[in-house]
Image (cartoon, rainbow, N blue to C red; front, side, top):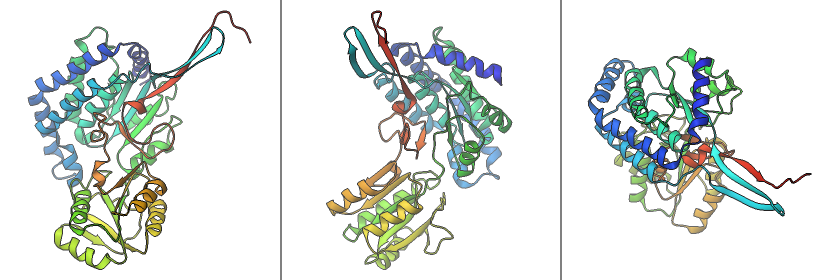
Amino acid sequence: MEEQLTQVKKASLELATLSLQQRNQALQSIASELEASRVELIEANQQDLDAGKSSLSQAMYSRLVFDDSKIDNLIAGIADIREMKDPIGEVTLQRELKPGLELKRVSTPIGVIAIVFESRPDVAVQIGSLLLKSGNAGVLKGGSEARHTLQAIESVVARATSRHDFVPANWLSFIQTREDVSELLAYEKYIDLVIPRGSNQLVQSIMSRTKIPVLGHADGICHIYLDEDYDQKEALEIVSNSKLQSPGTCNALETLLIHQLRFDDFKKALAQHSPEIELIEKPKSWSIEYGSAQLAIKSVESLSSAIDHINTYGSHHTDAILTQNSSHQERFLAEVDSGNVFVNCSTRHSDGFRYGFGAEIGISTSKIHARGPVGLEGLVSYKYQLRGKAHLV
C-alpha cells in the first residue's frame, strides 16, 4: 500500500504541471476509449448484475447498471468538462506589498484525493475526469458488487493514459478490499482529502478512522414545504418527481411538510396521484433517509414552523419550498441552513451534472472548503506566491 501511494503522490506532482491542453487531450482519450469499449464494459457489468440480482436491494441494483445510456452520459459529461475553464493557475488576489514586492494568490490542485463509493460504477469515470481536469491524482475504492465493471473501467483509463507520454501512469489508482481502505486511511502523509460517497454508515465509519480531512455528507434527508398558496397540480408533479424519479439517491425527497390548511386535501390528492408512494404520518424519527418510495409527511402551522423543522431534523443537503409568496421565498432561501435551497422545483435538481459542472465528485454538507455538489472549483486549493528584489523584513 505504501509503495502504491508513493507512486500516486509522485504522479500528483507531475499532473499539477500539465498544461490545460494536455489535460484536455487526456480527457478526450478517456472518452474515446469508453466509446470503443462499450461491449467490454457492458459485458463486465452484466456479470455484476447477475451476481447481485438476488442479494442487492432494488435501489442498489438500479445504481449498479452500466449500460449504453450511462456510457453516453459519461462521454457527454467529459465533453462538458473539457470545455470548462482551467481551474488551475487562476489569480484570485494580487497586490504590491512594497515597491517591487508582488504577492499573488493562485489556485492549485489539492494533491491526492481518495474516494470511497458504493454501487455506482459510473462514478469512477466522473471522478477520474474531474480529478484529471483539476490536476489531482486519485485513489478509488468502489463497492465489491461492481467489481467486474470497475476492473473494466480501470483498463479503459489505463489504455487512455498510455496514449500520452506526458500523463503519469499512476495518476488514478484503484484499491479492492475493505482492508485496503482501513490501511489507506492511516496514510495521511500521502492522502490530502478523503471523499466518501454512500450510506451514512460508510461516511461515519470513514470519519471515525482517519486523521485525513473528510469531505462529504452523512445523510440525504431532503424536505419540501408546501405553502398554502401553491398550485396543487404543479405541487403533485414536483413532489412525485422528487420522491419517485430516483428514490435511492441522496437528493430524493424524504419528508413533505404541508401547511395545515392544505394537509388533508393534499394528502388525499397525493395518494390518488402517486399511489406507489407510502405516506408515513408517524415516523419513528423525522431524520430517516428511506431511499425508497416511503415518504414522511407532516402538517405545519406556518413557514416558520417548516423552517424550524428542516433546520432541526434535516441533513443540510437539499430543501425546497413551493410557494408563490415572494417574501416567503426569500425567507426560505435565507433561513434554511442547507447546501442547496430551492424554490418551486424538484429536489432532484441537486446534482453537479445538472448544475453544469459536467459531473460531481460528491455532495458536501460541510460549510468549510466546499458545499453542495462539488465540481472543479471544489477540487482546488491555493498557494501564495511572492516575488521580490532582495527584500528583507
